[in-house]
Length: 156
Image 1 (cartoon, helix red, strand yellow):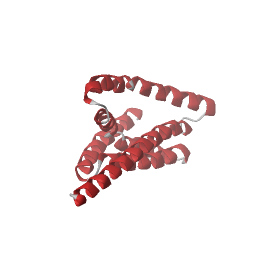
Image 2 (cartoon, one colour):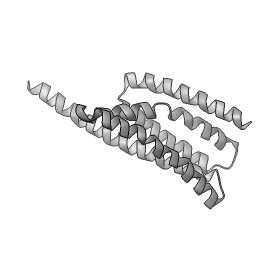
Image 3 (cartoon, rainbow, N blue to C red):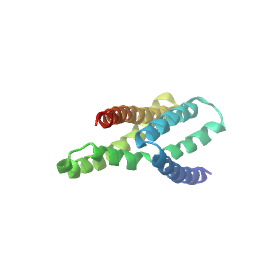
Image 4 (cartoon, rainbow, N blue to C red):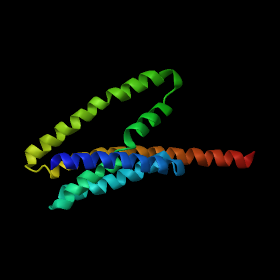
């Protein structure tokens, strides 16, 4: 039965990726990721604290929100770097995947300490929170740049 949930999780991942790709053609990638992060935090709160089978489905459904994260974070990071440092920045971002390997270990530790695998999903909430805060900052920078650009155009 657990393998079935993993398959459902993969399906959610790919569906979420397609939805995000569509949304990013209509809206700023920063805003889409920020909203995905807020929804992810809410779903993970539900997963961590609701003591019934719906929490399991919430844990599976959070995979909908993982789809656009890696590719968008990678692209946005490389956009922010000077061209001559793109190769090095790309390598650093790829190496940060190793950092992602620590999250399951931390989640396991929280599960062991608290005696609750369900509560340990709170660790993932903090990851979504960090992503949301990053893209909130990026959205603010983007809005300021758009405002400056509009002001410059109106003066010209």
